[in-house]
Image 1 (cartoon, rainbow, N blue to C red):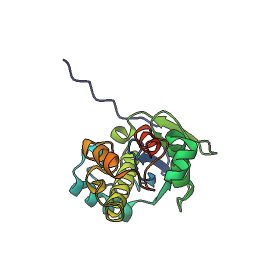
Image 2 (image 1 turned 135 degrees about the vertical axis):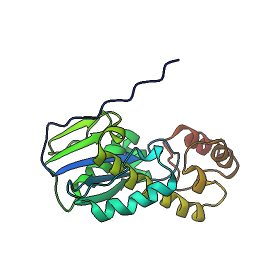
Image 3 (image 1 turned 90 degrees about the vertical axis):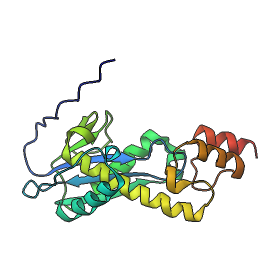
Image 4 (image 1 turned 60 degrees about the horizontal axis):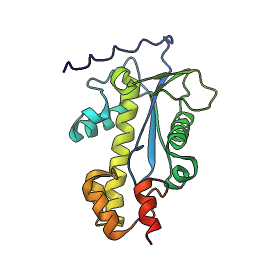
Length: 204
């Protein structure tokens, strides 16, 4: 089987400096908030090694997390809560988290690039970029900020709700997590609208 060719770098119609990239992390897990970040990079202060956060080691992500926060013109991290996920559904909660992140930037962007193929309802001039965290540096930076933030939060949540392995799988539906959910039941940090959690709650 032939391997897929890498997607080409994204060429943006906007050529100014106030370009924000925005991405979210945490659509697939059964527990925890969905976290989004927005970043405006400084063209005069480049950050080597930016890439899709999922393709970087934890050590590299941690290193880049600090460097992005130090060198970016502006960054913001926002979220949609478990309750909002259950009320809105995960897609709309993810879009809400991205909207909040961009709105919280201390330097407001002139143009926004959104990872994926759906964009929030907002007044910003923007474009969507499929696989943007592989193709746009600002989106890659946003994905790193969002992932490191959410991963750290799941480690802390593991201390609040021990026994589920949240620090390891970060809330994703692994075998360990599914067995713990069946054995221990759902916590307030679990997304009640997600089928495995909903089924467990129906057994109570």
